[in-house]
Image (cartoon, rainbow, N blue to C red; front, side):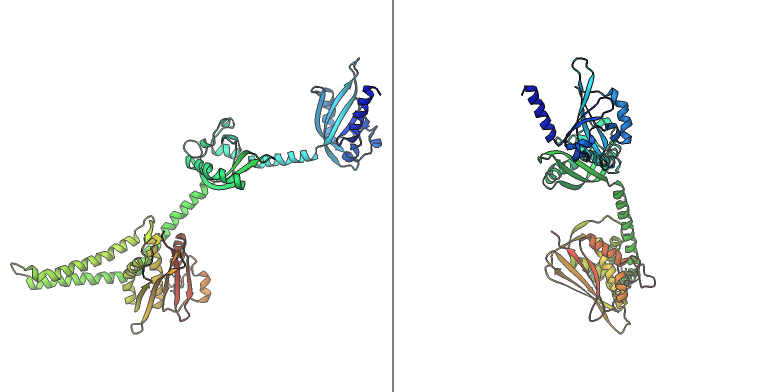
Length: 493
Ligand code: ADP
């Protein structure tokens, strides 16, 4: 066998074995002169069936015109031309093929003798391309900021939302470092936590600040994703950032609104106590007047007064005036509008202060306030005014519920104990009628009140204040009658 014949035999054998379809065509109308057996797998025809058919008859109608127009001017790059198109299978459905064709010319005349084509199934690639394009469209049109970042933490791509939010033109980010669009604290978060954690877990979620040009800071919830090659090497990172500006503004507004309501509620509670307190203040004032009148009576007209004779009434007057001043100060503190100050607080001491304010109300309604605390309790974490507000609400409610006629007597008992390892528990037991079981589910709702002039805010606010401090507040009826309100607070570190 000659070398040529041997080569042709080998080539023919390779064509027969190949999973790609190898076909030969006439130059004018692309009639199949030959097709390798792969044609059956790819298109469903047998070799005999396809030989003699024109490829033009099998193109998808949308592709055939395009191909007819381009065929004469096709650029054969180094003699090769590759294109992707739809081809009709024997069962009538169309499949995507990617073909590389080559012209075979007559060595003497240079005329095209035939065209040799190698085709393979491109359905998977086309589907993947389509899916990629769909994803790219989603990425471009999402309101979230999407940023692709190289391993050296320079930016490789920003979607439309990111370019707009960060005020960057499309060409701006060729040498853009991530540190130019994320603030210093955010960069430290990413470098120290985000990237190391994402390398292990695949992704990381955190809140940080991005820089929107002209010193504009954008709070975002950011998800960092690690993208790896098939071999597992990290190729790049992507960041998907959700702008929290509006959410933060709404939260701030809600916080201010909440502070206003808390303040208003304190004024209302103080209003409920006002008549009792006025009475309470009246007593020391009358006592002082009495001490001073006594001095006046004894010594008016005297040229000189001995200290020994006035020492006792004067020092009693001072003590009484200071006590009255204390009450006034506590009222002023309680009703002042101020930012919460979270600190370690001695709870029994704080409860006694609130009891001092509420005592007079108890006396007026024939209700005795009693208090018991475990010895040596640790401090709790909280804001003094907020905790006073919670206690005041619960005590005023308990006294109102336990109101008696002058002859009968009732008690509101406050207790503090250690609760589990990390909390203290405050309980307020009263001798009132208890809570209607049907009211229980709504008890802590805003504006729920069974009182004629009740605002229905006290319990709602108290619960949110306690929960903000990490505690819980609940109500139940005591088996022996009356209600019990309990709340927990975290022990200070
Ligand atoms: P207000 O005191 O303005 O009604 P609150 O939110 O403080 O608002 O209380 C809501 C309702 O819960 C009260 O109207 C009352 O029906 C019920 N309640 C609160 N404390 C007690 C209690 N110690 N005993 C019985 N019912 C209570």
